[in-house]
Amino acid sequence: MNISKPQQRTLHALAQGGAIHLERNEKGDIVAAECITREGWTLTDCDVAVFRSLKKKRLIASRNGGPYRITREGLLNLRSQLDNRVSGRGW
Image (tube, rainbow, N blue to C red; front, side, top):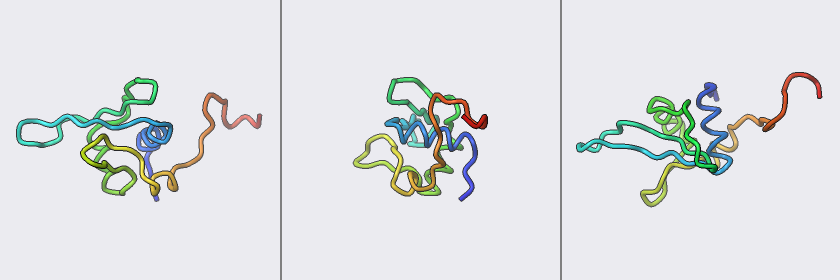
């Protein structure tokens, strides 16, 4: 499955315990999507377009009206990435 870099970054943040919170207007339309990492930081790559594409691919889901989190399908499609390491240098 093709996953763009902003989608990958968002999925990595969700896999590490983050969540996506939505902001809606009076009509119930989604105005903004905000990805909060487990440390409480906001991920700037996550926007409404990234949220909609991840939801359409069923890589994220909400349960009981809570924030959106990564699904098992999302974990399976996630490319492994070493945290805090220099990649591509043969270390």
